[in-house]
Image (cartoon, rainbow, N blue to C red):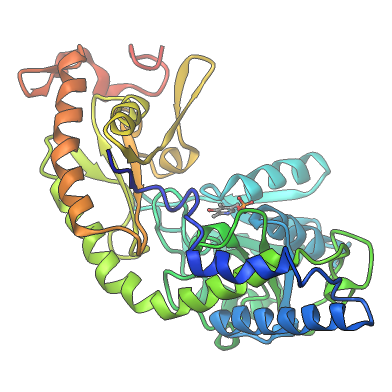
Length: 405
Ligand SMILES: *Cc1c(COP(=O)(O)O)cnc(C)c1O
């Protein structure tokens, strides 16, 4: 049975071209780029080229890129630096739908005595701009917001928000891990101060990330050590992975049109097909959204049961609920959007890439209705092809129904 991989927002397959480009740096080109001899020099040259490729994808200067170990480190570095360089400011703004790399940091900072404002979103997952603007104060050190939501693909208008922050002298950081390679980005035309990305979401390996830091922005290193990355991140460079990320950036740039035509059309066809299943709905605005992602709910079934059956049929997806201590807790993103519990429990994220094909979508559209029907036939909340409304599930507040308890 062939695998259908629809979980590209979790991680992507390393592209063979990326792997091929990395291999010499595990073999003959083993020098330390800081060394004064020729073995170091050849590696330093290759690193410069890789940095230029990533800068070209982002529309920035090579000097504005700091390599890190992952998207999470980039996010940590951005928050740390913004607060360290403005010690008199004690407030930061983020949103209710951020990645855990930001959310859990914000929680930590609250315990450290910072004031944190988490901006809400509407039913479509779009940010409340009024609340955002009203929250900005002279004490605000940083606004940090996702560019594209990893669960729904919904986009925040970060360029516009960066302008607002710039006017008020507030540093603006965006976690763009999911946006890179899926939408055009040209940092030099924006007021974005810092931007995080991760290699493994764009067909480079896991364990390499980068942080864009605008030239002249005050910066405090998170990893204190040697002179690497212009003294902004100590530690000998992860040479093979940086090389891999460079090639992945070149491929991402080349494939950007395909992401927004062929991949978008595949996603749309998959989504339209799935919406013909009764009691299904898309979570998140369908316009302000990445071309590769759909988050879709099938009411009265559990996301994790769907995943299990899909996986059995060879389909890899992910769910918007996490099973914690026996009760199913819907994702913080869907909760912030006010998705009803009956729908949030049965949510599935499908995220495509240029690797996916029409034939895969055809097969998925055959398997999905069978899986959903099978599960609903087992559900006490579903009778004769329709919801059993007398169950009272629709009015559940997240604590009182039979699924929640
Ligand atoms: C995957 C992801 C991260 C974390 O990246 P890692 O490289 O796994 O640390 C951060 N933010 C978003 C939006 C992501 O999707």
